[in-house]
Length: 96
Image (cartoon, rainbow, N blue to C red; front, side, top):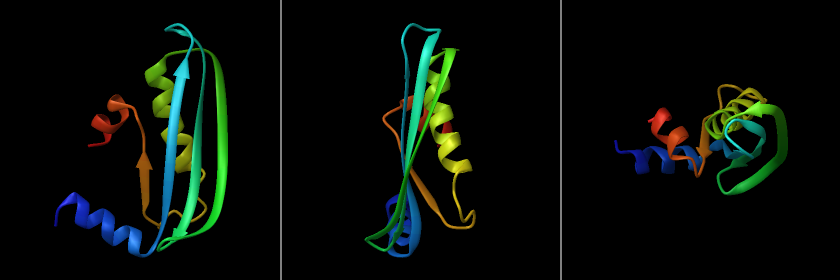
């Protein structure tokens, strides 16, 4: 089964969609991250929650990773599949 078939199978049932982003000003410098968690049953969104974090001295890559981590840690039901959406090649390549 390829990745697209796997994702289509997950999206047909109950699943989380986690949108993440992180950034900093300077490298290192002050930064922040956020994760938007959405619980779906098929195409119907059941819940939505936003989580934000900040650090005084950090890096952009650290904030990208932290966004995914805080999103995964916040899941209410840990056995429900989750799809993480990120614009960070560092995070995506690391997960793949």
